[in-house]
Image (cartoon, rainbow, N blue to C red; front, side, top):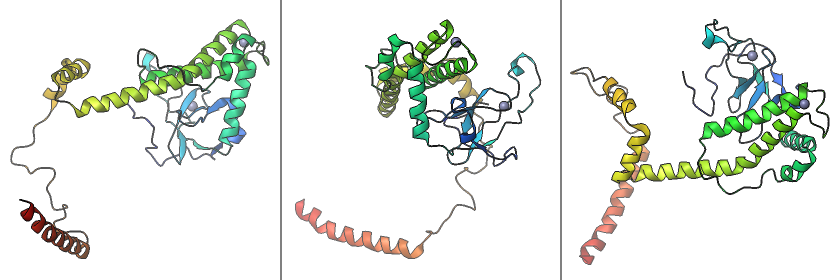
Length: 270
Ligand SMILES: [Zn+2]
Ligand SMILES: [Zn+2]
């Protein structure tokens, strides 16, 4: 089943373990950058998983193996629904991560690396939200994962693979502000077009985007209401009286007074 972003904790269940404190984890094993999808390397399956929730944070329910699609049986990872507590100074953690990455860059990339958050001109083609997230996220994770395991990537030194991954990550970081801007612009435009739905060209574009077989199938799947049944908006639970009678009557009287005052003005003007 597709999940909506940003993730919300859907269940109050946890895996009943003690909450996982980020202060006890390696700083490269989680991402809690503000404005980005929170993620963590699950201690049980050593795979990057999303952290869900706003106040109560939990590792998203996940399968212990990634081979379900190949026919393996789904087995929930014991790290699923693990409570996570951010007991670190996020800004300091972020600054340190940025510094580490910058120090790890090859010399020729350092200058570029310092411009981390400078907005670039928006790219010509708008990048979809999900794709951008995956690009930045996967670039960072593969780079950090490589550095963690590679004995030849030390300090400012990189092995060939490490260098490639580092450049990819820096590029993704630099493109991110422009991507975000393009995303926001795209959303603004979509909202705008949604408002002026009457233009035939817009309708045509929308049809081209969402139309065709998918809409037809969805339309045909719409089940009719059972004949003779009432609307779903009616029923005994629908309140018939105002919630606060006194306030309601006060407001009515106020409105009446306002109308009474306005009436002579309109008649004299006419
Ligand atoms: Zn896991
Ligand atoms: Zn390396």
